[in-house]
Length: 334
Image 1: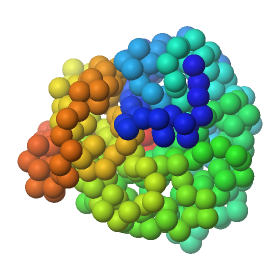
Image 2: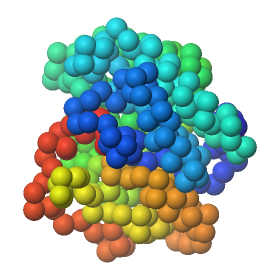
Image 3: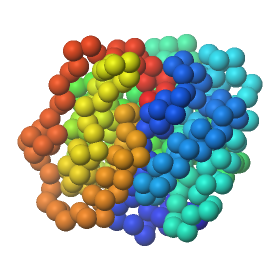
Image 4: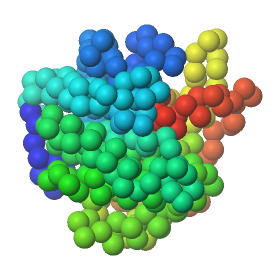
């Protein structure tokens, strides 16, 4: 069952979003370097299986397999002329799953960065970026998403281009950024600046927040700073599971499902109303988030000291997966 995103948000104190789609796809056999979005048409059963794990875990919001399905990213695979096809296929696959469920659900159209720096720091001009995002978002909206989900942004310029494109359509918009560099994005944008940006919009986003990053503690801290600054809308927390390391030929993340109850408790008390996970998380993480949300009790405002004590930085791996961190700028949900 699908419902309007606005109604779902107004009817629920806390909503559970899905986890790391790329993590699930890799676990199901997607080879490194593959184009995840191409699986929507060449291996749809793999994408369906990945989504199904999160749906069975009890999430309320599930994101399409379209994080890198914009023209600037698809050109790396020679797929730049298949933007509409890949985005429409992703929504269709997910709709077929959610339409069978009896509980209210929201299908979110995932929109990630272009991978290019915008002017004045890079070659991509604002108007060109808007057109890149408009092409992708238009396909997602035609496919029938309930909300456009802009995620893992690092710069204000790219966030604004994506949001401008999204506002061309009558669909709610969520916007999240990755505060992964000492409490700021890679481009120096701070949570309080995101809050001010949100308040300044003529059409305030349905939600803003933090995703990915370097672990749950940093995301919760960013959420707390967002809430203190007052974005004028709901707040999202979608943390990754720490910095990965290669162990026996596989990526291993330090934060397992057992960390999720603490993460949920602190995120809610920091001000989050939409809580999910990102890189390194699978269905077991989301099931733990679902249970923690359903059993929540504490309502005291969280402090920075408690965040640092209960969600300390995970030890940096002896063999950091730097290649994975770089690739995350492209696939983010790995």
